[in-house]
Length: 361
Image 1 (tube, rainbow, N blue to C red):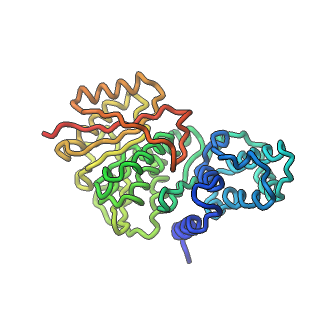
Image 2 (cartoon, helix red, strand yellow; image 1 turned 180 degrees about the vertical axis):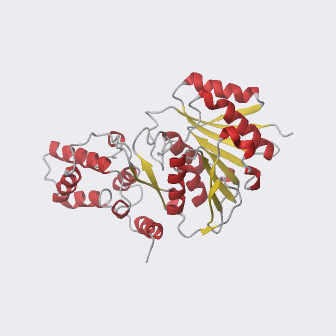
Image 3 (cartoon, rainbow, N blue to C red; image 1 turned 30 degrees about the vertical axis):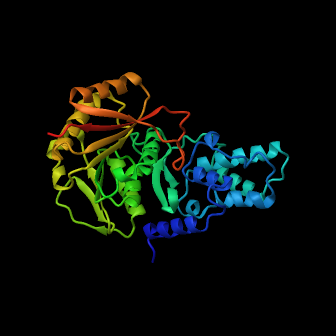
């Protein structure tokens, strides 16, 4: 019998191989945005709803979104699906277009168990998002929370900066290919899993320190690497270590306050550290700086740190950057790549990406 993990690979391959429209067609672009739950008001429709949609065109839209094979197997948020369908129905109504029966069947079925849902989904609980990767490299499916805070943490969803980090990685392949990579504050694992699937690093270690986040992270790693072999590890903080054939993939409970006692060096001596949206609370800065000092020392200051931040408070970010400068780190601000593959809302968030290094000793 096939496991759920095996099924997602087959479904992902089928979804990639049998796309309902040509690459970069409006329908394909909308499908990609739907699968990763881009807020409905932020979806780029590329004219798809600016003209009358025939009955068959509406059917193809449904096949590429709410009736997509990935969504049937690993559903995205029901609230999000209802919001999407509501928007489509409203737009077609404005054009006096006869709506496909399946539009209402799906929409009414989603609303049957509760009240009408708001347009931008704040749903609580875990569901899936699916990120179609560039250049036909497959799909990343992640179990995430639609809530800003879930189970006392903000780490159960992929934030804008993680998507911007993935765009940066996709445009700087040589910086990551075949490297030893450590991710800090991995959350549900978008960036780390993307690196492991597409760049054949020697090892990727994804780390966090919240129990529910680590549990979701392990589930997501298993889901996306169903055929990887389990590897024994003596480090009690490493809760999962898999061998995909080209890459070792680890999940580690790494508390920045106790990094020196983590035995990290027994698992990895990083060439590259990556992180997204970890600079938001100045009370964490001393522990984070201590962690960076420790990791850079492991590599004799030969590693580099790629940091993606959503600048919510300029003073907070500047405080952290000044701490790095005082600690003799060198900071280079990168040009943020436009949203092409991971569909993050560049108009709503001020994303900044830095490459951080230190002179060799």
